[in-house]
Length: 175
Image (cartoon, rainbow, N blue to C red; front, side):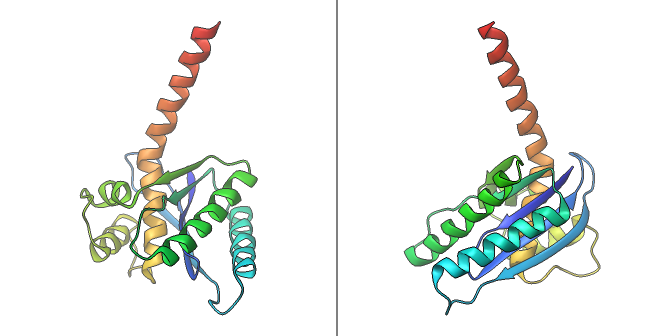
């Protein structure tokens, strides 16, 4: 399974592409950070992010997209930009006809490190180790995007199977 993970951000949006199957080591395909200029008008920034993510989906042909779920932050301005970037990431996957799953930061931390309370350094260290990289992916936005992709491969596969089974049961009960 190939997954494109997105750590949404309006100024820096991390993107990581990983291949793997549940229970097995994953393989790095690529990672990026899409930057937008804070001096630009919001519509231009969102358009740049949309075009960049659409291009990366087309280039890497993932089977699904994993996006970090926006959570409450103290700075409303920051959370608004993150939410807007998240919406663009979800749209890029949906436009390509791909399943899109969102994960909370603690779900990703638990999947990758075993602790939902892991800090950035622990996350980056585990991503580096799990993908057998010679050095940590930089900046942290890229490491977070890779962690999302790993989380989806390890947890999303199970979620997808459960959802498909539930859907079959619902359809079977309707007949």
